Length: 429
Image (cartoon, rainbow, N blue to C red; front, side, top):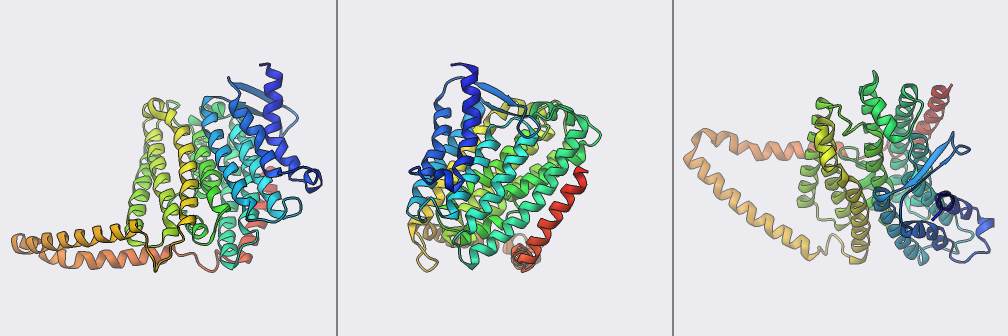
């Protein structure tokens, strides 16, 4: 297979959904949502690897496909085909409705972020994907969906500000902004610490990593299919993919303090998700809690790679399969939860088993507590107040986790958007 054909295929995969997003162009074509995914599916089936540069596009970006990228591309194709089938029965005629336009723009940004090999391309396509996905989320939604969407929009604007600053830091350090060159250059640069923190903050906001998951929980509470099944493969998966591509991890330079802190954050996220699963009865929140736990596992592994580069070199090949699996599992959970039709008054069998387990565990705790009171008198006073203190602290944390009216107001989101434009104009000057 010729390199020219592969190059045209890489360009067409991203350009075709963008063209179909124009209502006039798709008005004479049947099933535009399915047609938009066909080039990506065909590219997934093509053998071999290919790289193609486009000097005339976005300051000269580059697209590539290889064994690692195919994992993410397979996940993207699967969840978008599923979304297209669900959307067929949920939206109006695909030619005139805005939801189809947002669907196609989000798909184009998603595919571009997967195939690009440089920071400028990833930032541009992920930005297109993020704001188009916001339109897809709130299209036809009720007041709760719009409030959750505004919260997502606010977090997205802050994340883009942080990532644009990281992009400028990388551009001031090296002229070649391809991922491998940036990772090597930023590993020993003077601005490495600032670069690491801005990249981590930006992509953790985009992926909904604990404790920055408020928008994720709000969307899963309010959102229904078809958009809910895309949450795992669009914002979450692309946020985790960005950390693997932008960060100088596994390059021989150890960042022990930052890596250790990230490891602790990942472990706390996993514990938080486990606690919430045992204390919340709402089935709709299950995908969000699974996402928090899964991103916690990834964050802990990422912290290990930052602190110990040799470990990342040994196990880093699992990154892309893990992210692809996360997107598919999240989509599957979203579809399953949507089809269960359970409410808080009708808990599922799984939740009943969890309640039974918690009851038996509570009885064992009471037995152990009485034994400690009788045998270990020195711990008696501590044991009497420990559960009360823990519950009060848990209630304080839950109160802080609730999004405030400021974060869900249009004035706050509009102000952030204006600040984003001013900051980009000032930084680019």
